[in-house]
Length: 385
Image (tube, rainbow, N blue to C red; front, side, top):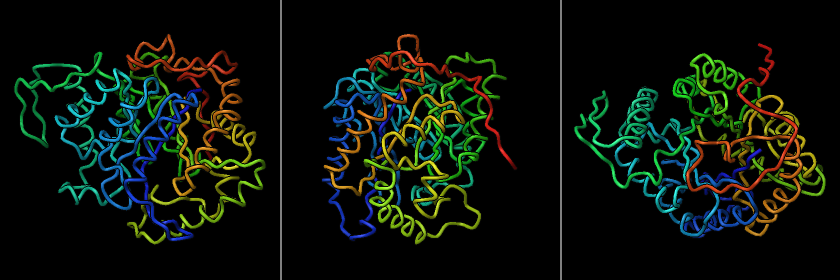
């Protein structure tokens, strides 16, 4: 299995102490964490994107450029690029610049985002978010793969003989699709033969499993090469201690404080995937995707979710509210005590020598041999409706 560290750059006041991290410090910590992730042997580092709320990831390509300058091996990614909001011309330019700066170490994850307020902020109609996503994706894909592009759509002016510069480092980089609540994202990914990353952060696993199953069915029906139907999965936070009981006790105040912060934000009635389904940390640990516990328990949980999802990329997020030294300790323990246990069980060709679509400049660590082969034929998730 491959492993990624994701930072969406949330920066609200600490829910327990009320303390606020200075934006400059928070942004520098993201870059420092990416450098540490490379040192520890993680395969990828991803930066999120938000344009509303207490979040500092409004310019993810700028952050990725800073990371590119301080790293040499690790794959750079996004989590997610909110493609519905973007001009594909400008985005193609920005992303190709990161790809060049990193010498071909970029792959991205696209989606519509999970923040409703950013649509009116940017003068866009949220009711058309899926229209924007499809059109912008298809144009971005074309701009990255072709020069002298002539194109016409519904939501932007006609293009004639357009070529974006710089060009990608070694041809178009891989595009993944983020999946959280809608069938649209997995259908779009399957249609084009792209991989997906399921959010797996706020809802029961069955909700995400249904969409993964749909993706695999649609991907196979479209006749795409099953070797490239990769699935990644997020998680509901990461916190390690010597025992699961200690981890729960130490992490509880932060988790439940964040739940209260979520509750203070009023969402539209019936909104799905905006706040956690797990009101207490105990629920999140026992029934949800939170990776909170001893290293042994966290490894067991990743493998348990793998048995449901068949995913070969695991993204983890260390809570930014922890002191920097504590964040580093959690990542070091995860790399030393969790990753080897999981990799001993799960084998994948993702980002390895047989993955011909991997980022051209990527030199991922050798994961060795495992005993569980994973592909698009993984057994379907059992769901009770």
